[in-house]
Amino acid sequence: MSEVQALMRRLGQAAVAAAVPLALADTATKNRALLAAAAALRERRVAIIEANAADMRAARAGGLGAALLERLELDEQRVEAMAQGLEEIAQLADPVGAVSAEWTRPNGLRIQRVRVPLGVIGIIYESRPNVTADAGALCLKSGNAVILRCGSESGRSSAAIHECLQAGLAAAGLPAECIQLVPTADRAAVGEMLSGMNEYIDVLVPRGGKSLVARVQAEARVPVIGHLEGNCHVYVDRAADAQMARAVVLNSKLRRTGVCGAAETLLLDRAAAPALQRSLIAALLEAGCEVRGDEAVRALDPRVREAAEQDWYTEYLGPIIAARVVDGVDAAIEHIARYGSAHTEAIVTADERTAGRFLARVDSAIVLHNASTQFADGGEFGMGAEIGISTDRFHARGPIGLEQLTTYKYVVHGGGQVRPG
Image 1 (cartoon, rainbow, N blue to C red):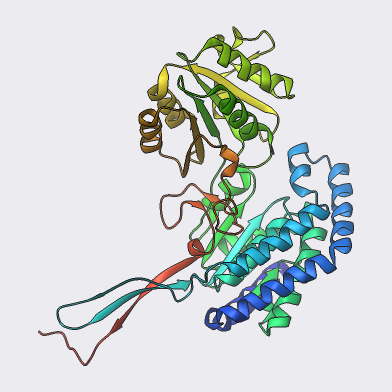
Image 2: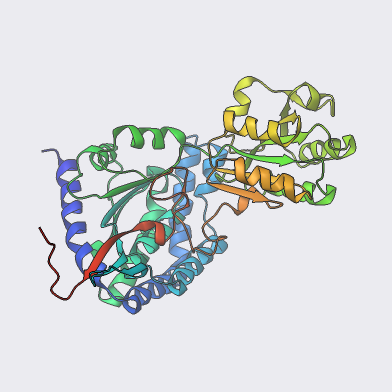
């Protein structure tokens, strides 16, 4: 057995042991841990930012791309957001033990469907050190032990944040092993989580680039919750309000270009006013966004570059957007079905019937009417932080928050009933 295999086995055994008392912990105890961890984040913010600065220097020297650098960077505002996120999770209803359905059979048996933790969750993520706080807190509140494996580029930052989570656990009297951070950058640790720890890990959640998620989905020997990419679309209908369309399009694309809910393709209704079409393309270009368009879009503005077929499939995660003119809402729906990744799509229109058609027929995890795709976020859904947006169709879809990190069991109450032969 290699050194990494031995290390990961120890982490797995410790997580399984910690999962038992955590699953039985009451809500008040879990909330004390979360609030103490939030306080620790604020108290240690200088150390966290210094650790992140070291990560940023190493990442720049290693040639990390601009989108990943943006995700990696921490400042006082982002540390405070992490602390507030933990406090918000503490305020949310505890899903563990909740009875989602209850009924009584003719023979007197009373049956309940009760929410329970998944067990031990393994989370593999890149770049974003805030995932350490979000994922650790969500797993804690949902009663799951967690093994976190951050990318090497965020190792120092994540370790500093993890220390705050550990301080919270200690303050609440919970085992430190409830939240563990893999203490090695050796890539063999990821391989162990995927295929060597199925006796310890119940579910894997990848959060990162397409290559990471594809590898996890291909090699994992336990269930996986995740999405490959966020190729999100905004469709501007003929009945769209011009001012609203501008605001939604610009925010969807440019608020933060490196998030999975950022719009990557703009679809314009051919019947929309030419002035509206031109103004949207010009607004994107003038905001510093490169536009790659079909022939009709290039005719609107000479600054638009020609789109290749691959552009309709691409998640840019940067200031680039593909743009196409389509023949109405049905053509927009067809385009999304062909090129989309089933993540998040938006329609801008004042026509409720058209909106209803789009919302009903687009088969993505999140569909929005007259709102930015950047609302694809568990916090914005009132779910607290989330550890990703699932495009799966089984178990969980959309933001993965507290409820999605639980499963259920059936609890049956009887009075001596036996089944007749």
